[in-house]
Amino acid sequence: MRIKIIQNIGLILFLIGFGLFVMSFASEKYVLTQSSIDRMVDDSAKAGLIKSFGEKHLNTELSNAFAFNSLLDQLFADINNYQLERFGLSDDRLERMVKSLSGTEFSMDKAKAEFGESDALTAFQWEAFTSYGGWLEGKTFGSEQELRDALQIVQTNIASYGVLNEKGFNEYEIKDLKYGLTKASSVGLVSSSPLQVMLAIYALIIFGALIYIFPNIKLLGPAGIKNDGIFHSKVKNKGWIGILLGSFLILFYIILYFYPEYMTTWILMVDPVSQWLKGSDAGRFFLYGFIYTLAILVMGVRMMIKYRHSKYQLWRTASVMFFQLSLAFLIPEILLRLNQPYFDFKNIWPLDYDFFFDNELNTLINHGGIGLFMLGWGIGLTLLGVPVMVYFFGKRWYCSWVCGCGGLAETLGDPFRQLSDKSLKAWKFERISIHSVLVFAIVMTGAVLYTYWTGNSEVFGISSYHLRSVYGGWIGAGFAGVVGTGFYPLMGNRVWCRFGCPLAAYLGLVQRFKSRFRITTNGGQCISCGNCSTHCEMGIDVRWYAQRGENIVRSSCVGCGVCSAVCPRGVLNLENRSDDNRFETAGLIGNDSFPEIKK
Image (cartoon, rainbow, N blue to C red; front, side, top):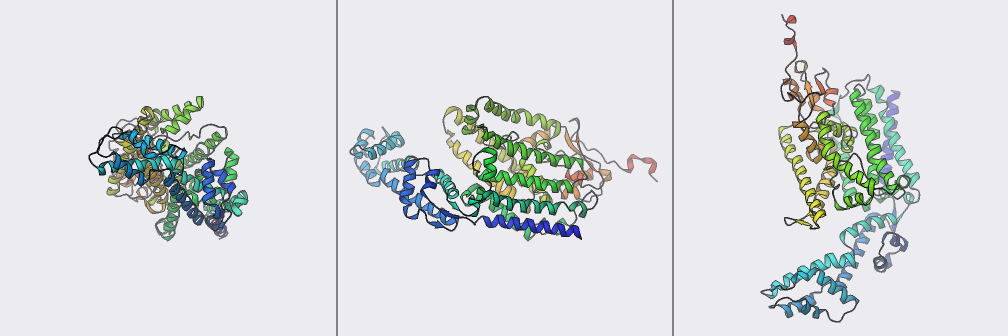
């Protein structure tokens, strides 16, 4: 009874901390000032435009980030419209060019006459026209409309790439400045005392969770299989609490990846940690890495208590906790403090899909010896490390012992592993989806490298920049983040690993056809309880194999070993043996092996 009271106290502390964390989202007010503009806008001319257009809004307090960003949207729209009207190719000038140049061979010299006297303004306009309309030189257009259509293309390109980039604000600048100005303009308890607020909130969450988790050593009784009641849980079986939790995670990831300007309060909280580690303020992904690491460490404790009867699970959990804390979080941030490239030594292409992007390659190459070592390390892991390690140990060496995605799935996601779809339909979809993502990653990377080596941004008429943008948005952010983690309480803890991870697909192909790893089965001892299939996070119907005494060599198997850990009869065993006869049936080992006990 006392233990249950202690556990309830822990739950209350956790809920208070989590509630304060959520409420802090809207706790700050926002004041746009000249100093915040000067800090965040490097171009003095553009900073002056923001001050001029926003003069009546300066030093005005706004109650929330939504109102503040609505103001910024209006400011940027007004500035861009003003600059486009001043520096763009006007409709009147375009029509004059149509009248004077239609029916003849297009000449840039004749077109220049429409720009009038040369001053700073017209000089920019003419330079922009020659840059984006030079392709018109020497062309003959059959009608005024044909020439008008061509000039409208030039007009659009001047506006989008010339005026907005140089004189206004393009969409990427706007996104970055909205985030930076929102953070710099915050006024309130969090911005004035970030360390104290962070310690209070995170201490309540962490200690509350641990106080709730540790009594399970007594409440669960002796070490062994403890999975009673999971399908009656409102958290673990898509009940209302699970749906609320999933909704929160989905919303968190959407804001993180697409609208970081609205979560600046949470980012401000971890500024002291970031400044201590890398000597600069935190960004959205520092916040994410910080929360991600804490989740793995705290829920890793829960995992160890639950599966303390299995040495394999204890060592595996300790491994993912170590790799996440050291290689994924601390070391990359410390490298930045030492003026070295940010580098996660355990991240492997194609999971690390931007490894071959031009900015990443240039950063590594420009940092000399250590950068070249990092480049060689990344290429070596992909080409040599993966096939060699998978041959000897299966894909489990990475997916269940090293990977951060797998680490979160095995700790924070463990309560939801039974929700994975075991149907044949899901398996068929899985094989198509995960290998499609792998193909997409290979094509995208090939296009990016082609652009890097040749300078040509188009491959077969498709922009490599567009390809990587689509992959980053839909796969890197949408699939891996929003769906991959947000759907834990709805579809299980390995949605991304099972249906989308291109590295898992690569590892799986090697494991399926050339690996010493397999799960062997002693079918004669199987009582068809179904624990193994229920708790397979990858949706494998393990019982089907066990009943037939067949080795499990599925490419999707991450070797987490939970099927073996929950088996009451010792039917399943994870083994690394000769790769001969991996696909043969092991045979049923039962009474037929001992004729002397037959009647």
